[in-house]
Image 1 (tube, rainbow, N blue to C red):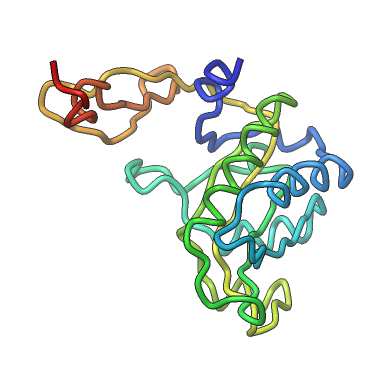
Image 2: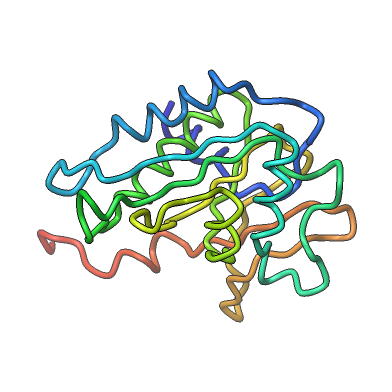
Length: 194
């Protein structure tokens, strides 16, 4: 069911780096993004895919990981992503990308989860460094990097604490906890009113 897939699709930040993801699998995932909705059906998104260790290292060096985990600089060697998908906006097609990259990215993550692959959206990117490392032409706007790999961590959803703190955290066993606001808090009105 879709609800089960959404519950299992969490932002994973530690992977089994030695478990490869094939280029064909990455192409299948990008195809899910391609088939997703696009504002005015402009389809301005383009993609770079990598499962190459050297290129992955260059991409990794351009990213910042898990801002709430102040004492964690990101995954160590052996726990880094096995693959990446970089989502670009082609300004020759449109200068407004709306939420296309979010829609496509979520489709990619859901498809990855269905295959047993975990992922994480990363928006904290050293854009000039990544542009240089991947030789990205100026006409392409870097929108998002999706890190992918077989998960090497357990992630659980829990309710937001009474103090309202929404920051994710790790316990002494390394389990990653993600607080979510309750449904009753986020629905502010229901129509028709009874």
